[in-house]
Length: 173
Image 1 (tube, rainbow, N blue to C red):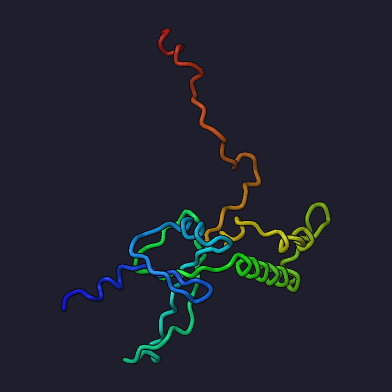
Image 2 (cartoon, rainbow, N blue to C red):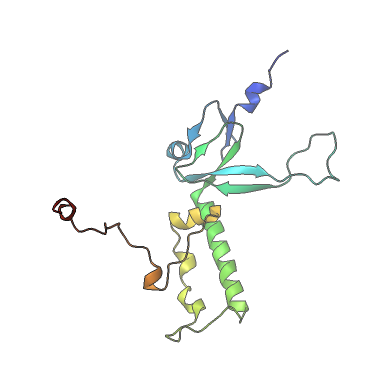
């Protein structure tokens, strides 16, 4: 009697590549988990909701899931499931996505444009799939940065400067 299932909701589960499940009863940062498991990244497992016609009273195994790659600064929350993914798998997925993007760019003639120098955009991005960094890995999470401003007037100043040169000008009056 009581809240015997409450303990299961207050646990975070980390699934290792070899199938081992690690349960933790406290919140932990992704960097700690990555430090304990070198050459691995932490991903959040998000189950795909069932369609209404498939839902019945019998519990079934989750057929498909979405996976979100976490940054080292993220914290793992209680009640969620996480999976460790090797860095080789992450790099292979990134290369596959970039090559698919490149093939889409090369197939569609509307996307290929001429630059001022005469080179095509597809030529400029020719070696991108080979050069993957941790910054590229974090771009998978969906957070995209803004493209740089093209006009100098649109760029932000690097530091704030006061409009008055010195404060002594004000006190001398």
